[in-house]
Length: 379
Image (cartoon, rainbow, N blue to C red):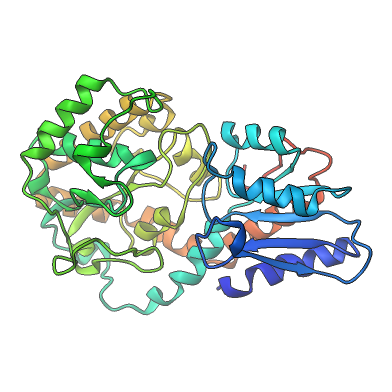
């Protein structure tokens, strides 16, 4: 498998095989975004070769990344090309940043490497049982830690589940107080129409949430807030008794292809999944060789451009699943065995990691020829 701690050393070693004096910048600790957290790798010399900036752990956010990119341009932009190694494709926000700062584009799938490291040990976890041996007690499971700002859709999602009285059918993690944005009564607003929510609808969402018995927890009832579990599989016993995993991804409203480690959690647990992410991201995952579940429910939701409509269609699919008996869902799990095995084996295979590493090298080599449209070996 992979060691994410040597990841940037691996990239820098490859850059040195192409350039005499490359510079590589990355952020530490994981998830950092401030210039003070930049780490520098370089070769001694006159410094004429490109600067590679790894902003790959987090998605690009409009206006949020200006401080970091302005600092980088001031420090290294004089007479040197700056290449932005990032983890999102076909991204309207990225296109704006590339134009604004005159960076060159180089996409790759960072979170495939991170997940390969973080979840490598679960191949030996005896709590993970075979799908055919599971007893379904809940129809679905879904984890929702950050719920304001660009993750506001998760609050709307939980409210829609409550509207249809579906919370009782699932393991649902959701706090009425978001660790970053405060209470939902404060952040459930869209004054600048960023997410195109009707104010009356958001008031209705608040009213529905007001009737929910908070907090909603799965395995962390004793903690005051839901901990960050990016590097672990959370609530394994609860996952094993839940039929489907609803993956609420980091990005939902944006026009971009971007997935994180979250999508790999049900794959490692051999669970079917439904994706709450940006449009076309289910197809994006399939382009890397994974299979999904169109044989059991309609996955056309993935192609719906409007975020609100896409969310409602997903809720309707969950509602349909909740109307089925536990015994029927256990039978469906057996039907899905070949798909679940394929995804599990593909994730743990050298083929997958070799694919994303080859894609990274290919896009580095072609950055000057196709700066706006990096070629992906996954498509």
